[in-house]
Image (cartoon, rainbow, N blue to C red; front, side, top):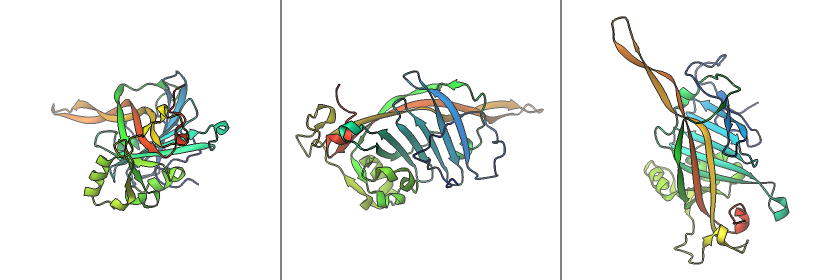
Length: 277
């Protein structure tokens, strides 16, 4: 039995699908969970499937896809708390002393109009399920300096979804000081945040790709991309018998967006992907 809510299982690859505003066939009434699946093409040419889950009661959306290297990427948008949660489950390199997988969570402020509302997402229905889709709009790469750590045990105060989504990344949940300031103004408990060391604090702190010692602290970089997501609603116009013009929702616009995260790690061993080859 699947638990209600937007947290997608770390062990399942759910796959998303788009399009057209309209009720989902067989939907169990207002507030019920809905799921979409869509086939998308990755930058390396491979085709993967995304899964998207909307819960209008909890006012959240989760999207999940598997990259070509096996990494499982999840994006959860918590509209109620104005929080975005990115999670990456990265396959470990056992021959290099890593565990089976490494989990990272990046938590940032959710701005208005970044993605369509949960109630609109829940009403999308699939067309042409075999079609491989590409985003209509490519949004620019966003670089984020994740200079604050989030205490997992207190994270539910920021968003209730952190407990499920980031359970594998308890020691690797990061956010930004500028986002923390926004949440503090909303009354979030500041004790869950810890400012991480920066280059100004540790003059010898290097980027991990330049650090030769795997056991030294460094600044790690990690990039991910959401290849396809409904970022805007489309509106069409109609004219009634009297000639009055009105607009109505008639579909969605899809976007692709990449993110680059920089954050402190206590040892380069936790950032082996970020090294020159």
